[in-house]
Length: 190
Image 1: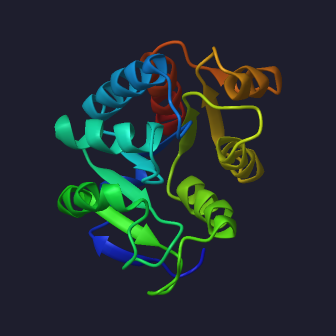
Image 2 (image 1 turned 90 degrees about the horizontal axis):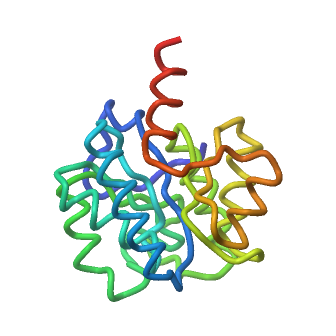
C-alpha cells in the first residue's frame, strides 16, 4: 500500500474494520439501513471505514461517532482539502474518534480519477465491504470490485440496482447486521 497521510490516529484495534459504502444520493431507506447496520457494527467493536462522500458515507461516519465508535474517512484529495466542503466539521470530529487519511500529497484536488484510487484504500483498511445501496453504474461497484480482487468479503443489502447485481455475482446477502458480524467473527475465530 502507498504511504498514507493521516489526521488523527489509526489504532491496532482498527484492523477490525468494515467498509460501509453506497449512494451519494441515498434514499430514506438507505439512510435507515446505514444507521441500523453501523450502530450494530460499532456495538460489536468494528471500526467503520468510508469515503466522507455525501449520502451513505456521511451517515456511516456520523452514526459511528454518535454511537461511541471509531471511524476512518478516506479522501480522494490531499489531507488538507476536505471534499465535499460541507463535511469539514465532520472530518474534524472524525479525527477525534478515528482518522482522516489520504494517499495523495497535500494540495491534491479532488479529481474524479482520485476516487477510484481512494476506493482501493478503503478496501485495504477493512476486513470486508458492506454495500448499502447504489446505481448499477457507480463508484460503489468499484469498491466492491477492489474487495473481490483483494480477497475481501463483499456484503450487499438487497433492494437496489447495485446491490442486487452484486448478490447475483456472488456477494453475501446482508439482511441484518448479524449477517456481517457473525460471518466476520467466525473467520476471526477460525
